[in-house]
Image (cartoon, rainbow, N blue to C red; front, side):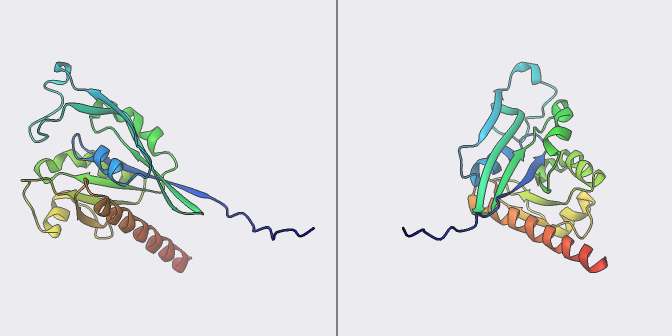
Length: 196
């Protein structure tokens, strides 16, 4: 009896990334654009109860909001799977962030230049916990465009934090942001190894 050669099983490594930012900045759209599976969304209809709480000035006809998380998955190869967790953007759901971010390898902070102040809580959160992150400047239709050095100055983020323009609606753009994050993580790991 002839036995087929048994190939050793490749160990599957799951990695977790968080997509964060202010209300209506494109987190749900980002996760949906890149996920290989139908993303899990916990969206609820916005009601008059949010009047005066959620600033809808620049979010157009937005009628729903994430109340818990968005979840997507990307299989890189047979040994690496990325899990994406999108955070809710409103302050009143901030209590969930610690649970959502536990074990994350890195984060994407999305920014809308029309409401740049709304991304500060996310930046502060990741800086305060030493979680590596990249900033994705989401180019909404009709939003003003600024040179990246001006955006960096406005955000007050360090030079080592990558800033990349993106369009969260498009898979290739979301992929570029995640690749930038991965490259940044690899570079930081090499620096640590070189310094050790």
